[in-house]
Image (cartoon, rainbow, N blue to C red; front, top):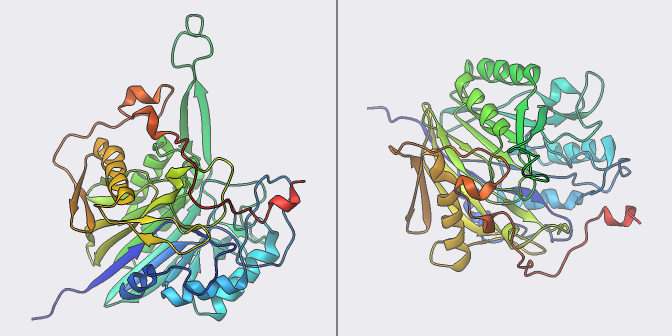
Length: 390
């Protein structure tokens, strides 16, 4: 009797190494990544000292060529490059990063020398399971989108509108309701690409750099994109950019992981707080029918040193489990602690879907979840871009 092909899978939060040493960059987590059959991560900025800072961008990040060795050491299977910092130092730094990945035989997706490369799927096979990946970013600085003859990222543009939540004559100064939606042509391109990819692979994984920095709540465009991708054939959708733990929801039984936080991010921005120290790894088993046995592993972010596991029973691990429950259960996700793992599955309960609007505390979210005054424990690490801001 022939066994059904399966593949263990692991992913995690954004990777932005600057001053951390490449050797041991992932600490004990490297063994977890090496032990999984297939892994991918989002590299948030160029791993290159080439190029010059792009004009008009306030915060600039970059690492070094040597940081690719940290990815090699952890045995990372693939890298997404579709995000809002990968071109902080222009085409030269992006293309140098790609060259370093190529030299170390780490495949990438989501950015490239032109739009055909940036939007091309990455296809691989592990244990008899054929996997396809696509990367997009809806956080899109001016000039970052790839073109027919221009290097850049694979864009997924999002539109934003603000409307009054209440009668402003009665309640002047009230915060507006924020409405967001993907540009129709870009969403159509995504669904067409996902559908075409699903015809030739068993499992389609989609990454979208989305959401709002330091805001754990989910915007409407994230759900629209995630659900459309799954309706088109994706087996899971993963997001980044928010820097904090956010919701996991299931659509038609398939996970949309809105944000896992920052895994290695030794750039401390002025607005970072204690919530950016918390993140989680997302694991599952890939089968020809999609993902099963989804779970999270709580971690402390690597800020100037390697990240560490923080299981339930530790203060950080307990807070991560509580945050996942707080943000995910309204979407109908069951969040259950089982030993070191936080199990994630569709719930039979009727979901209450919160709407991102003016008074967030009225949607079931305590206001304390939006900002924490507690400082990050590590000494501040200056961004490489700060020298250009004087």
